[in-house]
Length: 432
Ligand SMILES: Cc1cc2nc3c(=O)[nH]c(=O)nc-3n(C[C@H](O)[C@H](O)[C@H](O)COP(=O)(O)OP(=O)(O)OC[C@H]3O[C@@H](n4cnc5c(N)ncnc54)[C@H](O)[C@@H]3O)c2cc1C
Image (cartoon, rainbow, N blue to C red):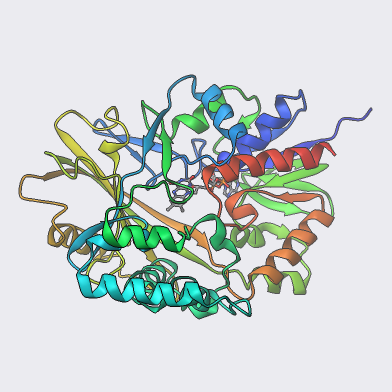
């Protein structure tokens, strides 16, 4: 039997997982990664004894298979944590999810949230909502919408919410039962809501240990090898602008808006579909500092306009191995897009000012290390063009023996676990 030549583009979790699932079955494949290290977004960097991930990266498992695989790869270097997530709004901290923890809010706001929620929960929906904004209002009522869901999601997605669809929400936004919302109105609710109520994190050395563990078990992973052209007619890729490599099947985890620049030939109607893709970007500032800082919380959401970031998380509460003794480290996340640009020359000082104003940084903290990750492709935006454009692109790629894979290759709101599973799916598809 003639051996198929399988090539994988990108050594983030999706590409590494695809390679692992193939090579584990003794199927040969080559992986090309443009950076000097594997991991993509799931990488860690050491700066002056602080280990920083690229933004917060915590493992959540819905699936036993992935948990077992990650445990096997990390050989015991994995700890589980019960989430301590909070929301900072109206000058108080309430537990996440907002909708199930109204008790901490000022009384007038809590009552408005509860009454409006009960109103919508008693009126069954006749028609499916037309967009994300209507879905929020009909799922949670006007109070929770106005006081949390709309400002937070507007800040996070950066686009008007009535331009978005809501099919993706099932996996990411918890919908507590009326009894749970009522319970949370009277007392702090400690039920395990949502997909991320427990998370896992390496005990040592940051999240970058996971892609490294994949890499150690793989052959044929070529780093510093950007793929600069994909020739569909010749079934050939160009690496580093010179080396040509033929393929029978290609698994691509390259972000679609980057792929459109290197794929050839591309029919005009498909090029147009690539042009319909939208995304937000994330400016991530990591800070290391002397002294204690939020010793119990894992992360905090900031829905209000008073702070530029939508979330702040605390590395030292994930593992005490990644922050030097007597120090703390945090990450901040600011969303932006063409629709809502930020001034990058001022964003760092604004973040630090806002961390001071909300009391996260105090006079006891002396900043010592700074790490910036400007993540161009943050979250694919599910707008009205999303389904048509992605279906047309994926179909076109598949007809040309390219399997779109991973969060940006497949253009989906995926977690690390999802990216690993998508790599397995792509490997299965190639096998077939
Ligand atoms: C801000 C943020 C926070 C997140 N937090 C979490 C979290 O807490 N928990 C969680 O589970 N998930 C989280 N995620 C999601 C998670 O990061 C992704 O699902 C996962 O890392 C995606 O892996 P991937 O391999 O699909 O993509 P990537 O990690 O983007 O990998 C793609 C790879 O392709 C390479 N590449 C690109 N172009 C080329 C080229 N031309 N030639 C060769 N190589 C190329 C890139 O260098 C990269 O290594 C977060 C995502 C973001 C943006």
